Length: 112
Image (cartoon, rainbow, N blue to C red):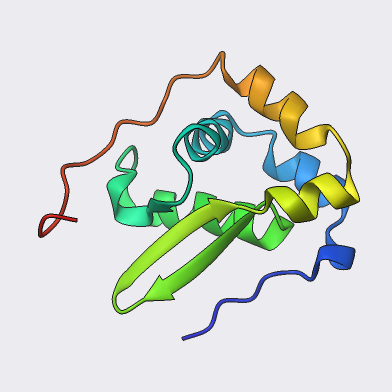
């Protein structure tokens, strides 16, 4: 299965800002900025469908990249793409997102 990600030139500011307007997604951004790439199932803060919805919104806006490895999904910030497209935006968002709580992490599954 391949997930669609917008090309860097297709990342649009209104979509990015709309995706960042949700407190849950700001918490996700904060955690990814602090911890780097994370396994999606380790970020256990909402129901699975709610979690998938938030990850999809961030990916479709071009803020995150999701890679699939076997049955696991890993999510990371597209910092280089966002910095090239909108210099300083991501740093400002991350600074502001520090006011939001970190997402609670689930226990590792199968030692991962």
